[in-house]
Each structure stands twice: as C-alpha cells, then as structure tokens.
Image (cartoon, rainbow, N blue to C red; front, side, top):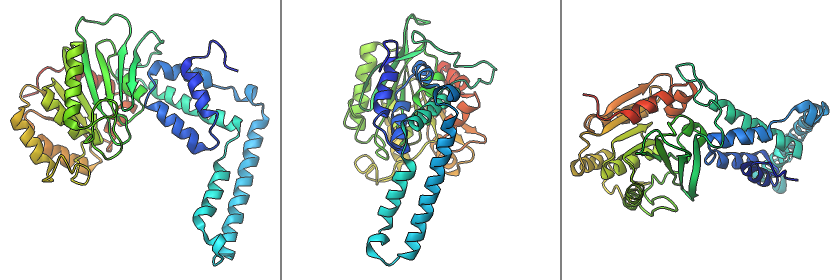
Amino acid sequence: MVSPTTPVVAQVYDRLVASCTTVNQVNRVNIAFERRLTPSEIFLLSDHLRLDDDVTFGRGFGLIVRARKGLEEILRGMLRRLRIKFRNVAFLHRRRNLANLQDRFSSSLTPLERRRHSAWWALTQEQQLRVEDSAGSSPAARPTVEQGFHRVWRRNGVALFSAQGPTTSDARGLIICFTGTTRRMGMPVSLWLNNLPSRRHDVLVLECPPNEFFVRGVRGLSDSLPTTKDALADLVRTNSYADVRIVATSGGTIPGLFVGLWLGVKGIALAGPVAPTVEYWPEFLPEGDVLAHVAEALRAAPAEGMTTWLAYGVDDKADALFATRLAAIVPGAILMPVPNAGHNCFYDLSQRGELAALMRDFLSASTPAS
C-alpha cells in the first residue's frame, strides 16, 4: 500500500520494479531513471528505498541469499555436465536455449532481493552526488525539492530542466546538451545537473538512438539535424535566452558542433569527440570526411568570438588524435587533455570533484583564449 507521503517518483519506481523478475529487468528500469531524475529526486528515492537489513529482512535474509547462490552453482554444474555428456543430442545441443534456461533461473529475483538491488542502486546514485569538489566543498549539499533543478517537461528524446525560485540575474542562459550513444552525458543526468549552476542556466538534454548521430533529429522535437537547429532557434527566441552554449559528449560532439555553428552560440564544449562515418550519416556526409564538412560549415558560419573547448582523455588515443585534427581547423579552439582518463573524460572529472569548476569556467568564458 502506498503512503500518501510517498514521493511521486518513488511511487512510479515501485510500480515499474514490481513487475521485474530478473536483475536485467531491474537494471533497465534503473537506467531509464538515470536518464530522467534530478538530484533532489535521487535523494527522495534513495530515502524511500534505504533499508536496514536486520530490521527489514531479519538476519535470516543473508542465509536465504547464500542458499540460493548454492542452488545456482549446483544448476550450473548440472547443465555443464549435460552439455558435455549429450553434446550430440539435438534437443540438448541447442546451447542458446540451455544458456537462456540457466540465465533465467540464476538471475530471477525474489521480492526481497529485488528491493535490496534497488536500494543499493539508489544509494550508489546518492553517493556519486556527494563527491566533494576540488575545493573541498560538496556540490551536492543536499538539495530539497524547492532547490536546484527540476524537470520542466520531457518529450521522448528531449527534456528541459530549470531552477525554481528567483535567479541570480534577470537574464537566463541555456545549456544545450547533445548526448552520446548511451543517451546521456557520460553519466546519470542527476550527476550531470549536479555539476551545473542551476540558478543561472536552464538545461536542455537531447537524446537520439545509438549510432544515429542525430541525423534523424530528436524524437519529439525534429526529424533531421537542420530541423533540430530550427527547433532550438525557436526555443531560444521564445524564451529570450541571453546566453546559449552547447555541451556535447561522444557521438553527440559533431552534431553539437554543427548546430552550435549554425545557431552562433557563445560557446561549445566537446568531450571525447567522435567522428560519424558514412555508414551512420549517409544523408549528411555523402563524401565521407567529416572534417571537410566541418571546414565548410566554418566558412559559412565562422567561429571567431566563440569559445570552443575540446576535452579528451589522454588514455584514449583515438579521441586525442581526432580532437587534435579538429582543433587545427576550428579557430581559437582550446585542447583540454584530461590525464588518467579515457573516452568518458567528463565522468572521470566528476568522480575527482573537478567537473563543476570546469563547467563554471566554461559558462563564464566570453572570448576564446589567444
């Protein structure tokens, strides 16, 4: 029974997870929530799911889990022996079906295990929000529902987040975020929002299916990259945003760069840039070389006066090479190698408590470095 005081986000989560019978199903629900929840919602959900093992489940819960794992090991051994003994028997030689049978049994969850799995996930999300920044203060000093970002609306592949209450200035800015193939900014959206100044900027997060590179636009907003630009221009004009900047990661970097040039934004930050290929952009890149098309876009819409940051993980040689080639043709572009980081360099910076300061610097930068 749902309590009248149970947060709406917790009610929705409980309803979705209640029908899950395997770990993978619960994980799919968790991933969907990671692409939607704000920091304050993460804290609310974590409070709702946090459990005292001894009080809630009793000390016998651990024994149940260990006994179940023992049964799983016995089943795996039986299936392994059956595959060896009856390898040439047709109905047992279907290894895919046999593996599916094993996976379904070994990953099935009791209601108690499902609850424990959800609570552990929510606690992990909360702990990520509590990472202290490089100055020693936590960017996630716990926000209430009335503080920080809230979700204004969400339609399919696009969501707008804004801050409630008065802002620090009359003129608000807009951060347009182009996600990568995982449909997020290399991290849960709550963690991403937690590294941004909520009182000064609204945040628009754009998603697209994996490996489409926004060539078919954004579901709920547009049907191509040029119409994405038109829809964003209408949004900026309607809301009278004074400062528009683009941040893009992975597969969203080149689409974000094109749209930024077309819109004439004040700044573009690209993290882990990836070049689309003809295989994924057949309509947009008929001749193949993405850098040639970037150069053409720069001739049509010069980037002088626009802040352009190209961040990449030093450990990812492909990202380093492409970022270097891209910086060579974008006027005033600043290369930002991130040590001890791979393709997902923004997430690495977040885990070190350094991303919030980097974003503050980027959002306050007015002109490119000489």
